[in-house]
Image 1 (cartoon, rainbow, N blue to C red):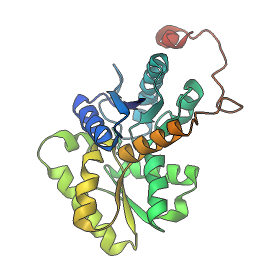
Image 2: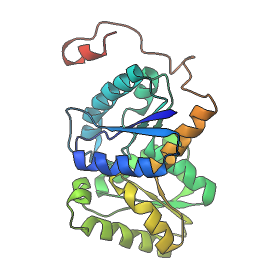
Image 3: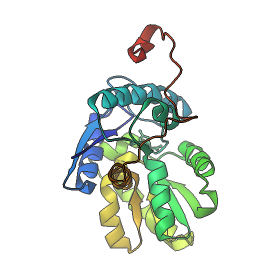
Length: 244
Ligand SMILES: O=C(O)C[C@H]1NC(=O)NC1=O
């Protein structure tokens, strides 16, 4: 039995549910999904400041997951906030949905486009493309120019904008695949793939399959060198939660 902790780094319960359901839909019969979000923090992540705040909550959840003995952790926000810090803290694999979706897209296309939420977060996706070495694989980046939480407002407006932008990207970018740039879009990928006839990739589902693969291969985060457990020192104030 593989237990996978899926962390929505923002504190929106509805989005945590959307993400958890998408993860469960992708999970194999022997996998159990534990969908969580930080007990405190930021309701949505729409920039560098939000990411910095969210990262602490991610690390708290990583610590809890490690104590529960989970077989893998997923950071279900397209900025992959706290990913390397989480890998230092974790024993099991830690995968961010942006890296998962980008890797998957390179396996089924020569170039992919990204569709995300606010224009100001495009720079975060660009930075990740550079960091992960996928800049030359990305044809273009688009934003639907709606706040993240409109994906959970029940109007369907954000979902319609995502569909429009995907169609526009397919027409204009010369891309072979689309990466959905938000954890809250996780439930849209399968229907859009069928309707648009090109791979539309959601990082939550991609990360679930990658964690399952790593777990079954007996691979976990290397503790040799850069990702060794953090140097032990007495943390103070609100960070005492991390003291051993
Ligand atoms: O960066 C974005 O636009 C999306 C990102 N923000 C968030 O709260 N969850 C996410 O996946």
